Image 1: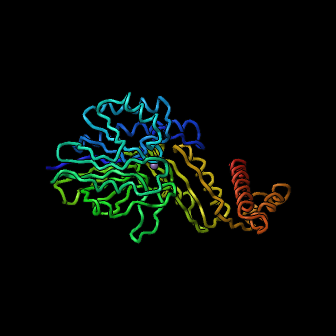
Image 2: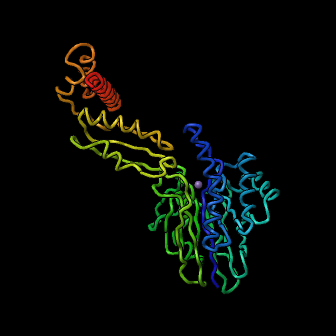
Image 3: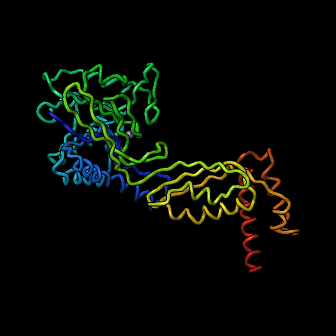
Amino acid sequence: MTFRFLHTSDLHLGKPFGGYPDALRHRLREARHGVLHRLADAARAQAAAHVLVAGDTFDAETPSPETLRQALRAMADASDLTWVLLPGNHDSLAATELWRRVAADGPGNVAVVASEAPVALVPGVWLLPAPCTQRRPGRDLTEAMAAPTPDGALRIGLGHGAITDFAGAGFAGEEGSPGVIPPDRAARSGLDYLGLGDWHGQMRVGPATWYAGTPEPDAFKHDAPGAALVVTLAAPGAPPQVVPVVTGQFRWLDLRLDLLPGEDAPARLAAALPTARQRDHLVRLRVTGRLALEPRAALDAAVDRVAPEFGFLAADLSGLGIDARPDDLDRIDRGGALRQAAEVLLAESRDPTLGTEGRAVAAAALARLYGFATDAAGEAGG
Ligand SMILES: [Mn+2]
């Protein structure tokens, strides 16, 4: 008897993404909803009939009516699949109104596991769920997975929360909560597979224990494409076959660029950035090192030119020092107000009393001044 299913978690439908530009926030929320379709497609492509969501389907205990109803609609449309939703820490059993509405309005192919009672997914395949009772249960709910099932059954645990590490010390969860789930829960409770949620990156804890990670990334924390897991169980006690499938639309990239004087900074930038689907990339770029004024100005110009191609690109050049020679300042001006301004900015960019941020502001302003002045000189000469 082979049983194959899709393991996912942490969809966080309705996440507001405050702090990002409005148009991007809209696109990010839309991508979270869209991942329901991509999960359904992934399940079908692998001939899996069940999608097990290990918690945090919803970002909040009180999603908007649109978030909730449109999610249920999308799951209903995938009528060839069964969706099994486990309450996580964001959408725990304390969200009584949410789960009451899902029970009242949800389609027949959506099942909420609202208790730790084992559930038969199909004959001979039992789900042992550990729904979060509240946002911070503070104890190991997966103890319930020791519950008996009929002889010869496949046993699948579904839980949400942080594991302890193998020495028993805490492994912090996605939001810093201390770990309480033992990493050997699968072996302890005779599980053929333990599907976990909470950690938004995909992680293999053991041969039969995985965090699926979020199928649609929501932060710069985990540098990987959003993915789910296709899990195949061949027989009770046999190791599961677990295969990641990419489901994410947006990539969140946390890039670092360390530059040396004399390097071709725009070329290094171009080599570091993705060259396809830029609109679906969010990039946080931190530049460190030292550059002469000319390549620094060229880097500024390259960042300005390329940034609008991306869904989001924020470059932090505050860790980038400036090497300025008298020749460089001469190219701004040999005397007068501009030259004076340049001298002041250069001094400030090296002034230890100004602090890192103050020096960075001065260096950035000097690079801009250099860029404008040499551009203008180029135009005048050309
Ligand atoms: Mn989560």
